[in-house]
Length: 183
Image 1 (cartoon, rainbow, N blue to C red):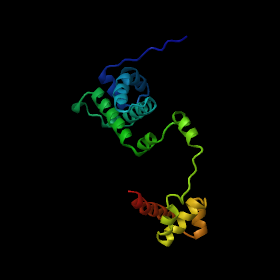
Image 2: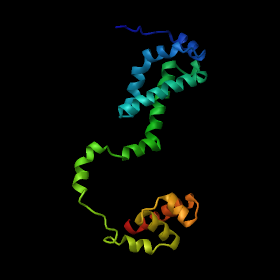
Image 3: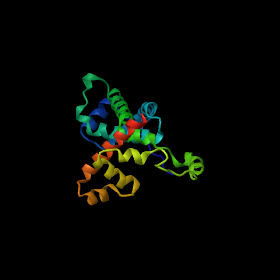
Image 4: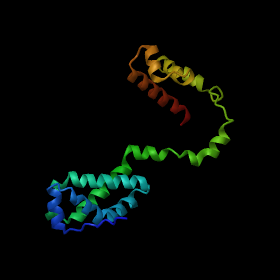
């Protein structure tokens, strides 16, 4: 079994090596600062896997932004900590992260899905088909094809001889109109 020796350099040595793009400095930076940076990131991003990804992004940004470090504005550790903190906050605010949190793991919902399997959806019961029929004809036709007849957006676009973007826009606008009935 091989034990790896941790590299430890002074801050000045780290800065010089980092600005010179010396690949060995990344191992030293990781050995010296990864635990502290991960601690800051994981306090902001509670998901361990996401925090690990942000830590990796942090070291990439440190490597790619080494030229921007200015020793007169603060210590190297403070600069790296700010990069880690900002990337963690950016991740939290990102659309992908927010959408991923809206989705639920299947393992947590198996019982719920099993209990719902006998439930059938009948659009007529809530009057949805009547509401769709009352929409503008171009909205009605697109919604009927996609939601009631099972067409994909591409198939509906081809059938109606419309650009795909137009079909998607009409669907979105129709859904916005339908929401008014439920809010």
